[in-house]
Length: 203
Image (cartoon, rainbow, N blue to C red):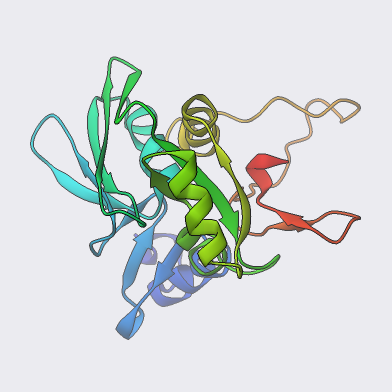
């Protein structure tokens, strides 16, 4: 496909990796193309046709059913207790087990690929208590616990329109008709005046 547009495949992959649309592993092979991982992770996805795959993090997993327009079963586990967590998407409605499950959203630095700075801190937990315990055990990450509704909305906001190509509404005061350059919302975290950084979807 790259050759059909006069581009070298390795060049295209390097460009996509630099923009953090995917990550490359050994021999420059694709290891992940957000939200999917080509290698097993803690967040499994099972589709109605029996296809099984993995997501890079909890937020990625929550965005996949809306992105693909399909039902799905997400399986994960609490990193503290090992207790299983399941999120079942049926007709756009998500059911969480256990009902007390939450998501911790954080990052370890203000710049860099999402895989390095954020994915390790975007996990499901059975409760706020275990999420807070994990945060205390990992002081190199900063973030917060979010409830199910916020986690679902976050997944949809990042990945829901990824395959449709829908552009977000123009910002107030911007010129209508002038297309904005394509941006990857996961690519970089941003630093606030206070010196604290935050993952873009939470701004």
